[in-house]
Structure formats: structure tokens, C-alpha cells
Image (cartoon, rainbow, N blue to C red; front, side, top):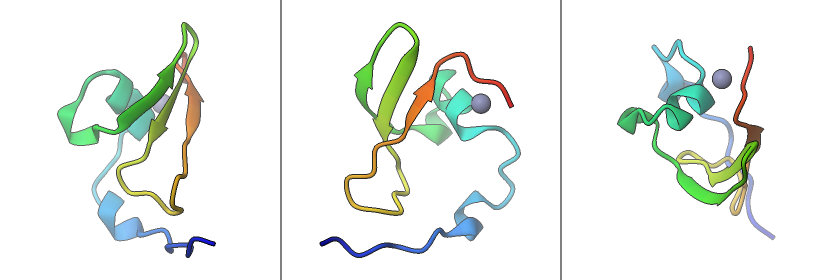
Length: 64
Ligand SMILES: [Zn+2]
């Protein structure tokens, strides 16, 4: 069983943009590792995971 790491909000201090939109837009400050990609969605390993093997999945058409 992996140990849960608390969310570190200080890592996101000053971040005002959506990290998924920045990642998909190619901003190198928001790089994550692609796991899978389809025409409409992406799955990736978050750079700052809160859980081991945590894989967020997000639609490419992303709205706030
Ligand atoms: Zn977004």
C-alpha cells in the first residue's frame, strides 16, 4: 500500500493558469509525462503526484 502524500499548495503559489491547459499548450514549466492520448483526452503522470501511480485523465477541450 502506498503512502498518501499531502497536497502541497505552496508548489502552486503564484500559478494562476490552469495546469492542464498549460501542459497541453506545450508550456515547459508545466511538463508532465504522457501515459496515453486519444483524439479527445489525455492521461498523464502528474509532476507532483499526491499518490504513487496517480494518473489524471482530462479532456483536451478543457473549460473552467
Ligand atoms: Zn484548463
